Length: 263
Image (cartoon, rainbow, N blue to C red; front, top):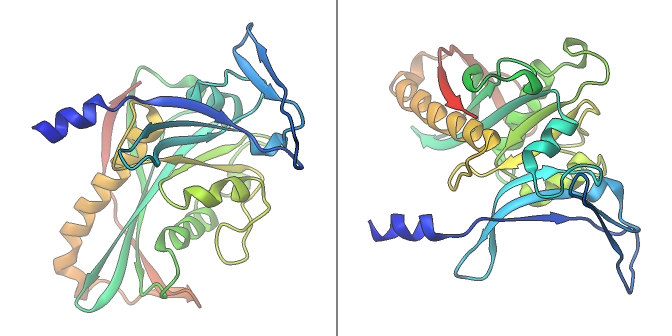
C-alpha cells in the first residue's frame, strides 16, 4: 500500500527537447503564445520531441511518453503533437520467455478503429495481429524483429492514402528512436523506417493517462494472456518459417481480443 501511494505521489513533468545542428555557445528560444509552441533557433527540425517523465530517486528520469514534435504545435501537449503528425495509430509489444529450452517471443499489435481525429469518446481497441517469434539470436532485441515483421506484413504504404502518416507506439529502444525517426539509423538490421511511419514511445510499466500509454499497456496485458494460453500447446504450433540470420522464424497466431478505453 505504501509503495502504491509513493507511485501516485510522483509528479509527472513534460518537457520539449531539440538538438542544434552544430555546437553552439548560446541558445535563443521563441515562445508563441497564440498556440503555445516553442522553437529553438538553429535546432535540427528532425530533433524535436515532447516527453512526459518523472524523476526517480536515483536522479535518472523515467520517461513515460516520448513523441516526435514540431515547433509549430503546442510544445507541452503530446496528443496535439501526435494529431499534427499522424493520421492513424497502432501499438505493438513483445514478451519473451524461455519455454522448454527455447527462446520464444510473443508479439501482439493493436490499432485504433478510425483516423485519430475522428475518434469517439469511448474507443474500442482492436487486436490486429499476433505472432510467435522463435530463437532470436543473442544480442538481437526481439522487439525490433517484431517491428520489422509488423511493418513488412501490415503497415504497407499502399494501404493508406498518400501523405498520411502512421504512428506506431512501442516501448523499447527509447534512446535510438530519434535516429530511427530521422532515418539516420536503421530500426532493424539495415532497414530504415518507411517515410509514412513514425515511432512513438510509451512505457508499459509506468503508464500515463494518454491513449498511446493505454494502447501499449493493452498490448502488454493481452500479449501475456495469449502467451499463458498457448504455452501449454507449444508442441502443437506449426514449425516456424521465414526467419533470417537474427531469428529462426515465426508463426502467426489467431487473435480475438478487443477492449474499450476512454479518451
